[in-house]
Length: 526
Image (cartoon, rainbow, N blue to C red; front, side):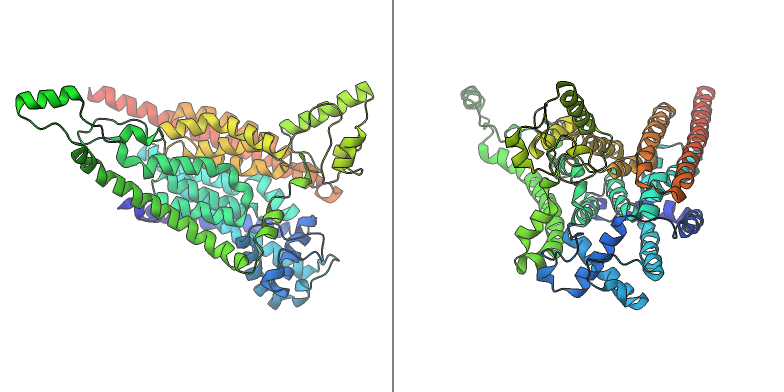
């Protein structure tokens, strides 16, 4: 069955047909990224260098305990294994970069190697963008199948990713590519592949948990419980996410038994009803076990060795450091930035300092009236407004995601999977705990790669993408605060906006023309 096959056969012809164009796009982008190698790099560069040193110099049992550097390992185990793999190549380029030290190390060879790994791993982003663009283009008019290159190029050349990954330094493009592959697998109805890609992603970076509720409900309702959507006569059943009691065998009533006695026909028995349902339960069980087996297998390969050496409690403390506070040192432009700013304004107006009890709980250094604006990572005590806890933010994120989650539960839509995941990402960005400004990038890349195939949707999509991209990319600019990158960063953001506007406008014109030609053909045929 195609359900159990990988997503590539359905999209292979499309991807192969675009291979030359994609190769040219990748090489052109690689040239630009190579020119950015001498640019400023942030402390994240030292973070990843130190992680290579930790994973290559220390035994496994010490990976998540080491505090030689302040940049301790706090990503899931699969990313630690990835750093261990990258350290193999680093040892050939310059062994000194693998020295475990509290002092940052950034020789020219080290910079070239680490930046080159980001460029090389961007191939995953290109494949993911091409796969999702090809998947959504299936609903476009056949004559316009070539315009799928526009969404793929906009996702791959996202200005925010260029600035954050290839100047500031991170691996967001690689991780976003895995998210695009998972969503493309959902869109083409390959649930096992979707589960595998998403499990890999979560074991590389747990901050993509914002999409976990959607993936769970989509796979549950659209795949596991799909056999229960119709009964034996083809009549629609109760929605798959409702209680399984709706699908339970129904015992014959007394009236049915009396009628059976009068007519001489047997009333439907519990055994017969159960027999009718058993094949569907069997199919649903197989599907559930298949999905669970994939997720458990990937997670076991990732976490298993660390669990075996007793690192799980320390690992969880590193993965979820709630003591870092509600807002990041550089505030992401979300709800909690407004909330914290309002608290500062109210405290200033009322001349009300933080209470001593609250200061003692939060720590004197960060509980002061300027703690949230001091550029420090830590618990920020509110002076006037109620204190926000991690549980509050998690509940609010789920409430904001509820319209999409409920809709997915009732009627899962493969066509809307990309926009649904993007919506969930925006909800997490808006109300999540300790959100980084870079968290806006995965939703932007998803929206860029999954352009609608109808003119009405494409028009709304273009407006939304341009608005969010302009705001999201602008929010990344303070990361590049040195004078040498000032003009470059602004020019890249502006150039992307202009190119995206023109490309989306041309795509919309082609869609309108194709729809008009199709309607004219139908009228002529009539």
